[in-house]
Amino acid sequence: MQPQLPIDVDPDTGVWTTDALPMLYVPRHFFTNNHIAAEEALGRDTYAGILYKAGYRSAYFWCEKEAKQHGIAGMAVFEHYLNRLSQRGWGRFRIIEADPSSSHARIELRHSSFVLAQPGKQGKLCYMFAGWFAGALDWVNDTAPDAARKGPPSHSEEVQCAAEGHDHCVFEVSPLTA
Image (cartoon, rainbow, N blue to C red; front, top):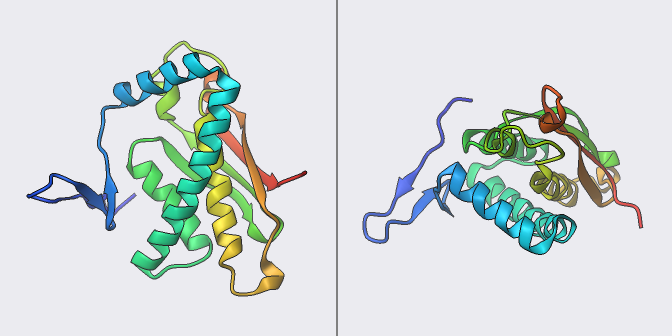
């Protein structure tokens, strides 16, 4: 996990940045309470759809910015993304397997912030992350230098959650079907 996440604070504006991207720093309970309130108000399916689209766009944007910031490309950006998510307290993410050319990946998540913040709650609590992995893998494919390696657009879903009694959560990325 080293080096530690760099955080710069502008002395005039108070804006926090990491790798030249503006950041917000909030307590986990604050974020989770807002997340639960939105889910209750909108309904889980509607809210999950909104989060998926927003998360997909955000991951894609992040990968583009980080690739330029650090001079990295391809799966190195995807791996860097999971490392940064892990450093920011969302949980510990690890690629189990990945094949961008076929738009497949499996991501393991241990110590999910959503599971830790809701002890005793059962079900798939970590669905917010799903769009993030599809957006990041699609960025890898869309920027691949060799068109023959480019996979189809992808879709991601949480297939296992620690809040269901498992040791960890698992997300699967697969080709998007119409």
